[in-house]
Image (tube, rainbow, N blue to C red):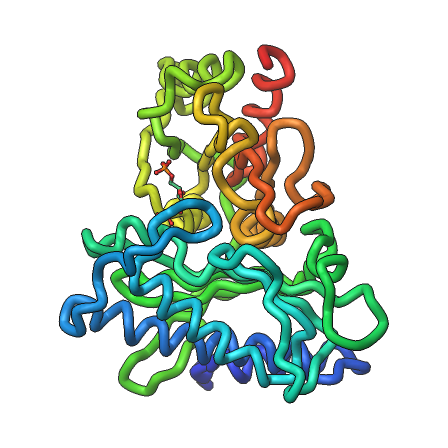
Length: 338
Ligand code: AFP
């Protein structure tokens, strides 16, 4: 009997591309560059303790957060992978205030790229999982260098999105709207190999994930929802179990695999978190595309994350993401209690 061959990410991308007869290969190039950058970042993350690159640079980023040295390195790696590749016309990153133009000496392509180079970086010094999140849109301006208009598109219009998780193994999970596929980096051959084909999130889970340290600042709807999850009711498998890493990629990946819900609600105390903490373009929208194509959902409590029209590169949103029934339920509570 023939055994299924090893499928590299490259082969997988080529096979996906063949489904679109008119494809020019630019989106494939973009995805290859993600895989390439992920391998370089992975190398730095793995050697961080040895190379003395843990710790902060002493600077603050656009979100007023300390820039970790590895943040900086991951940002540079992404930039260097994409500035000259010819697939993108403009970029934006969680780490930089303004959009990132493609230098005039290089060609531009028809896609935009938004990325969070190293999410969860405040966990780095404790050796906790971190990740890179990315999202691509087709440009809307007809030609030339890309503009903010090209980047400020709803998540629904993403053509590809995904993340890399630097954990006990390094995984790359992506979707181009044809299922969600996971690849594990085989460091012995330096390739991402297909390990999780067509990932489906369970329709309902038993795990919730939220920073309960903020509970006194939650709105009534969230307080009541979390109480509901903690009540005992065998029929609906309550009480739920709580897991919170504080590194979005890791919390999301667990939710994707086991089901359940991750919540980062708005906060009635911290003015910076009045509309949530997580960024629409670099965190919420890309993961929402992954969740939806795996059969799950993501909402801000009022509407699907994918339907939010961004107005600012660094816009923050509340995020409720995971199994469809669980996200529907939190929406119900928010609509009922605010
Ligand atoms: P850092 O990149 O500063 O570590 O922030 C991580 C993050 O953006 C996201 O990965 C987590 O889900 C969330 O913040 C954790 O926030 P709290 O520390 O407020 O729970």
